[in-house]
Length: 227
Image (cartoon, rainbow, N blue to C red; front, side):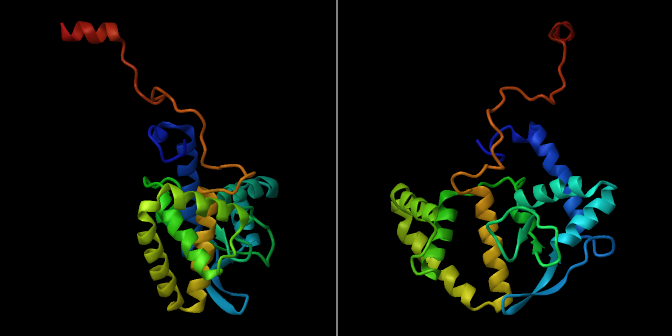
């Protein structure tokens, strides 16, 4: 079960994420939020980037907390996919220095959105990476690619067609936009289809039968009112 499935709106995890999102929105405030600017990554300049240290300092000052607490909260912001790294997409921990760069994830991909990361979408992503990398995928990605090929083989022509189209469209983008989008997609799928051996941050455990936030009405008085 994941955070997007039934009943999740009643869970403490959802309330926690709503608080994270409120903080992330404050981070993006043009006047009081984190200072963003164009940063050099590889051989191109990425706009609207920020350093790990900027994120850490802003959290500590905004919430009046120590650096250790700010670091833990910053890790959550990255692990849940609200911010993604530009240099090391596989590392979903906040690096609190001035050389590690990050960008905000678009709200459409936030984990509280009521749409699930479908197998078809993941297959298109892997197929596109397979085209771009000329078959050189990470081992777990190869296994997932092979598994999805068998599971949704009836859609495979459509998946390959979409992957080729997205790859072609991506090549027409500016280098900076293309690089940022690659990091954005990589971080998104690391959160929603995490590699084996890593914690699934969106797994909330067993489903509840009842809504813990429901206002309970005494059945006796309810019956009296009906009579």
